[in-house]
Image 1 (cartoon, protein in one colour):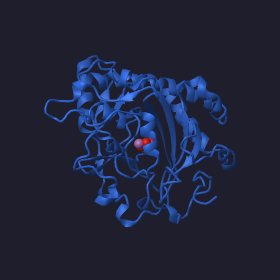
Image 2 (spheres, protein in one colour):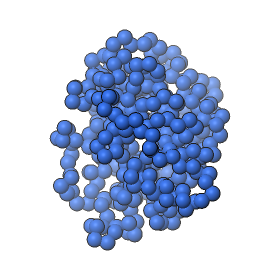
Image 3 (cartoon, helix red, strand yellow):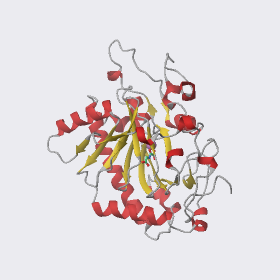
Image 4 (cartoon, helix red, strand yellow):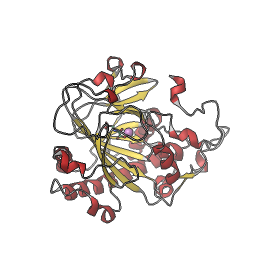
Length: 352
Ligand code: OGA
Ligand code: NI
């Protein structure tokens, strides 16, 4: 094993291996990142639903990100999920390597970095990816160590799916459409999970946990432990998202950007690492079903705004395009524009 070695091998690194070192122009420049307390926090238990819808509209249009509190997911389940995630990555390396794969088409795999076959610089992250829906179809492939992995992660993923549906109803209403708009367009939604482990890093200024990217799926619901690391690009500036205890971070993925006809943005975000504490995050990705054609409603075409921005496509087609790239290439949706215009560009590297 060379660069494919897992980071979670149980032995701390005293220096950053060369394959993780970014060239000077691509480093995170952590001292320039703004502390960000202003990411909208939305109380889902508020009795005034139209006010909640207004807050969702503002958050989606201006940030593409928000946090939700009073979301109904039991606190004990959240704690159990984080505990299982931690205990999984503490398993002996030989045990974990049984699940290792760098093939993105595998439905259960432990991997490292992002896409080790395509990227030139590695990222300071190990991750376990799972398919979660329909649960009966996938749960028998899931790890049995830690022993309660299947019970806890199964329960968590069911609750996360329900929560995602509630959030999608609010987003649909916030677009001025019926609450079932996204549900109908996304078909029989698939659901994936990434359990991300970011070990203590000897030189966090030189590398990333995840470099800047947008999420290719429809909607992401992120659970973080109490450690900061997520940063969001707003107005050309990286902002640090403070973890709010008990909250989930929600972000718009590329598919809702398409289905909102680009009113809502799938915003660039990244995860940075630190030299003091390891960090865990658990991402639930809601994805269009394979039966869905992704195309925005005509109502969103807007008078005089040039109609629909993207051609229709399937998620299979989109996903292949996404995984054929390196994570820090340009926005994948650029490939699906109806009329490539002046912002059409294949590689963000041209702008650096
Ligand atoms: C992701 C992601 C951020 C984080 O998994 O797509 O953006 O803080 N994660 O782990
Ligand atoms: Ni992401």
